[in-house]
Length: 276
Length: 241
Image (cartoon, rainbow over all chains, first blue to last red; front, side, top):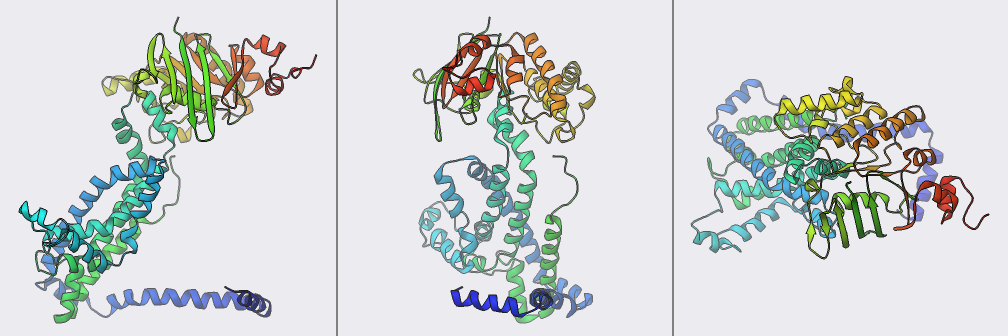
């Protein structure tokens, strides 16, 4: 803000009584809150439970729900298995390259999903960077369930890696050194000291990553397509159902919102006594 | 008699450390201003900081040798390390903290941990987590944990600094008695005049990464080499008569 802007603010501040500022604050904050809540409320109040039940019985629902649960479970497993060692290194290393990688890993958060989908296609698609290599090995990824998993891992990875890195970085180095002096190998220190101490952060990161994978739409559509039973996950089913049966779309949307709410409640900051 | 010998150079950030030490079971009190490199010496000995060159050995067993390419992993060095914060594992009870360094069946390890805690006078808190212990209790549990695997030497970083005035004297007397009973080399970092005297061990003074004076307490008191030593021991400064 320029000099004249701050001058204007100063004038405003002096000319308006304190209560007026407070009232303005309520109006602005309340307005945004109403805007955020309204769509969610609409999702629930514009349909009846009978509609939702009918929507749940729609033929598009069951395969999409199954596929979403299956692919997100695999994605999360892959992410935890590969992401935990990476996060451990990022969290404990003081090397400059670790800080650079920590920043680069955030890229999928800011890249538009459609761009991510295109990039995945150009990398792993039939005519992509390593497509011919995969084809030679008899693997055809694009427009398969594997592509769904890859898209989910790509977009969800930053959420897990970021939380796990912070959790590992927060462990007092002395605990790890002392554990080693007590005869523990690096692997024992990881499993008996570091992982238990980082548990909270790891679980929170995994929950956020899972939610992101469950909601993945754009990259999946571009890279995996929209094939029922193979690549049509819940968000894609919502999009497809909208064309034929709004109630089915709404039922699927309600499922997704309930899951999202459950995750938020699960991750809410806990008050009360800690043993630590 | 077991002797711990270190002759090492360590570069850590702005710190340029070059130090030669020899410790027998009379122990050694390491003193020096903040940032002089005392903690780094201990970390290098246990293998948590890699010396750029030099040699560390205990009872003739080489733990590190820059020229010989020897760098034994921390868990094989047999050196106990007690950091200033005690670093008790917060998610484990006192008994499980102590049992962490023991080998054998689980029940047997816990039983031995309990008897060790009993011997150090903190058997009653064996099932509590570190967060529920007083400073003095934490220190005894940490000491029990350090002693449990029968280390070849003990390295203690300001073991009394985290204690309040009331518990400090009794804990100190206990710690000194325990260290004397161990008959193992020990290095204790201290910064308090009374503590330095109480340990009644040879003293080495580290300033800016170098040992500026070493010897018996009495000789340091008689002719302190730097104003830091004079100030620490409360005697006249260098050059004073």
